[in-house]
Image (cartoon, rainbow, N blue to C red; front, side, top):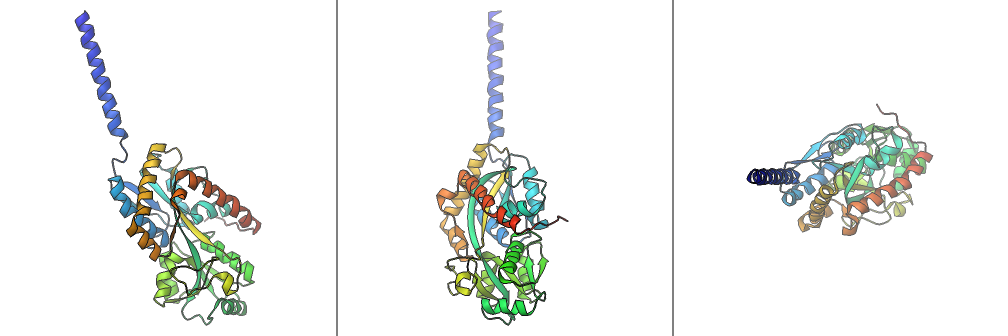
Length: 330
């Protein structure tokens, strides 16, 4: 009997050990490809930034990092998919001032931009540029405003969708300048920039990441950067304060999020891979060329992003609501 009990006890210990080993094996993260959802069409600013980082993160994570473009509805479709994804770290969401701040103020959403996500890392920011097709007769911002006042409702501004960040920028521009023009919604920045270069639309208030290459090539006109400091990559472009529209400051930020309930060790792994990518000299050089400013390392932590995200909502939502900007989702 004693021998039998010892045998059963040893067997039980062996089974427990095997179960423990199996559990450890299945808990290894990541053990399969990771998908980063960009809620806009391919080729736009967010897509470009995400692909640069994903390429470098692959080396740190030891797994493929796939970028999936889920465009439409000013980023709401793709962002909603991230919110509903399993909290296992295999679906990461590209987030921005548009998707995780502005949309929450102007739309009735099926998710909460603050409560339904876990922060991973704050990435970079870029101020907006006020740009126009190269055949626009105005040569500076004051002349542009005068031309728009003299031609009410004749010009068109491209946006990333009703209630999107560029749409909000255009609405505030109209309020500050007393101008009126039409808005044309696009699924992403790449398509709208193509139409601006082709002269099919007149204006954009766009991220420097998207607009700078076309400005440098002489395909479009740049009137001002919506910041209180000039861009290092385009020092010849005046700030809005210098150009005659003081205080019109719009900077677009980018971040990574995962769905609510994702375990902290998984978030820490994703954050470490992101921070390694942002510290890579080659990555930093590529982002600088695109007019992107990387946040300091201490602001790249999940905790720092959580505080930043909350502060952005507390700053901008009262302004948006005071302007009575509300869009019915279609």
